[in-house]
Image (tube, rainbow, N blue to C red; front, side, top):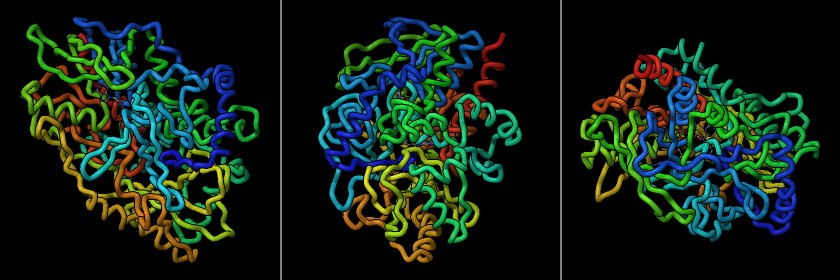
Length: 542
Ligand code: FAE
């Protein structure tokens, strides 16, 4: 699954087949020019360094900031706690398949924590070596928040669904932002920068790998729900070649959740490639920012830990920066800011810091189809469609794959709902907590049911109860879409400048108050484009 997510089939034959398919990947990637440019030439940041602009994190917000600052003539250093993900492992592949998670899969865990924990009633998580893997399943008391770790942030692990919210919903997403500007300038700029495209509908109608989505369409339409194609950053022509057998398989080989070796236009291939090409952007992977405070001579003192691949700290570096951009993702930025305010490192941050956090209303479910509605043994991991019941039911459901390699007769969905509940980060006992409770997902479940109860009733089908535990219908324990914690025009001004500390900015999903009505990264990118343009013009030009 893409935004919705896969599980491993657990069958040895399947793993072997996928492994063999994967071994041709180096050749394929090189021929396509889709391998990330190794960052080897760039030295990591040195202790005592001074940089004009320091960006914490290399996801969407950070990559937009780095590119635009560099184009404006500002030297930028990006600090990324995850790995560079530019070097193949001993199997010749940079990333492991979703169906065969290995040491590369999870961030510092000894056992996988797959979003779908069970299959046919059996738990499918497995032991893995502790390693700075690509997907973080970060546990808070009431929710597990999945996030990408590495150069490229969430773009490394996500489904690539690149959705611009409906114009009529935008006022609720970012109430203080001029919608005309966003829809005329910044959404188009973001879509171009990200390389967004839509599936060829004629191919969709015939290819085996979207049988599951055609079943999703049939069931949606028979119950009177609008079915929509959803754009993605996967290279659709490449996927056609995968299906034709003329390109090494990635989306059709179960790759997504732990990275795609081919086909997906991650930030490594778009914004970050352009940023590096300016010659003004350096990146320090396996470096984690732990503190930011005002420097006596002006600017900010930033404390950074250098990490090993088993999570140890090999060095602690102190650098200064004229300006610091928080782009550590909604959770990363919120955790840092809450800690820095509470410990007195940044005492002037206002009381909005840590507030307004939401899960984009995420909830997952599966349906069991009749034998006459097979969803296909071969499923592309890239979702391309959704069911839009936002106006009537407060839900946009992505028709997600379940690429197990066997026929499951299952339909699987990740719903984005208008769940109004919001959490707050706070500092207690020397760490940052989030007060979200699992019960707060109930409105999301109720909204998702407006679609799936009706479809089940029309089709005479039932919910799957074996995907999230034993006899558990709803995947209500997680989110892929953390948003908020340093909300625009509350913790910051209307362009992301943090109140109380000039020269500090938030430029990632933490700015967005909990919900985007669709998958979030296009909105995060477009908002970053808007804010950085203003910041460069007003704060950085003489
Ligand atoms: P993000 O991309 O998370 O980048 C933050 C970066 O900062 C990460 O690389 C961190 O490792 C790094 N970092 C954090 N703390 C520190 C620190 N202290 N020091 C140094 N570095 C640090 O932030 N969204 C969609 O729109 N469509 C999809 O199809 C979709 N599918 C998803 C599937 C999965 C499995 C997941 C996990 C997410 C998915 N998302 C999807 C969500 C999307 O990836 C997410 O909203 C964005 O990546 C958030 O962008 P940010 O720039 O806020």
